[in-house]
Length: 138
Image (cartoon, rainbow, N blue to C red):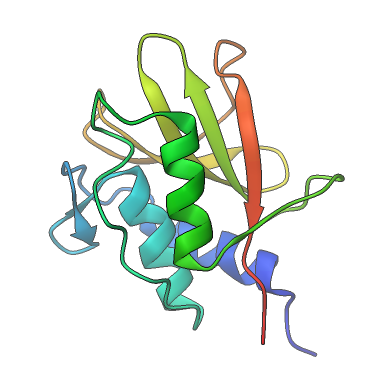
């Protein structure tokens, strides 16, 4: 039996843990940012997403609405509750701006700029979730 797309995305994201952080990075062997983690994991499980128009998470002039438009343009759909493993979470981090991560069911996988690598960690209580997104098969 095949794994659901969310579980496959979590497994692919976890394989990226330890990859180097690089602003605007889209290649796991060179470096990834938060957008790159989502794109690389999706590509690894057969969901090549449309390329983003801009590096919308690390640009100070980007809003949550800009990022949401980019996610929709890339082919993800906004998720309804309940939150499922493999969803892409969009955070609205105070003083930090929008940030993407992949929900594992209890933790997140994301590019951590301060640690200079992709990590799996708990969600900071200071990071409000702005929206949740899913890959759709077919």
